[in-house]
Image: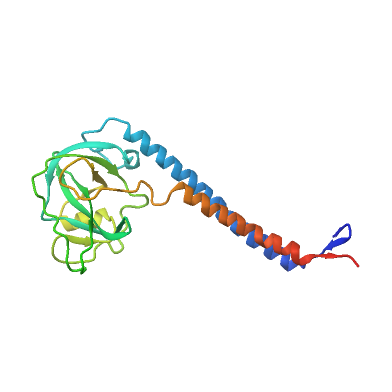
Length: 240
């Protein structure tokens, strides 16, 4: 191909590789854009549901469980202080610790996990935090959190096999319910920051912000342009 005093005649293999690599990077950029829109929708959903009045009874079935995510609740029940879980590898303000998950038997007989907040990891991993309740709590105000993805994955739910509180790696509701001897609702109630009986409560709404997805998308699109630029620079030559 001649462009005035220049010609462009790259090898066919170079063209194919350029198209392949650029398409791959552009596809990754597009995927990040889609994730950005998804995160924006989640934030809008959170704000909308937080403005709705609190509910006093959890859903009777789990068929539409995701429709209850981020709803505010006011519940009555009994906390199982001697059967608590510590969700491992939770980071808050740059420090590693646990989220304290306390089973709560509701007035209707069902059981749900109450996330009472974050506690720091001790000097030694064997030194588990004291998460005993300082007072009886029967009235709970909080927000429903439904994990994204399949909440019933069975791989590696527990670490320790004896003793309480029990360290767990994942929110595997089926496995944790088996340990309790009572089925768990596939959700967590995050204790309201204003309510007593909890620890540090500073939960992220989404694991990665929409702005970060946009930044990653820009990087992928920039990388997609690099093979094209190289193809042009290396193969445009002055005609003899």
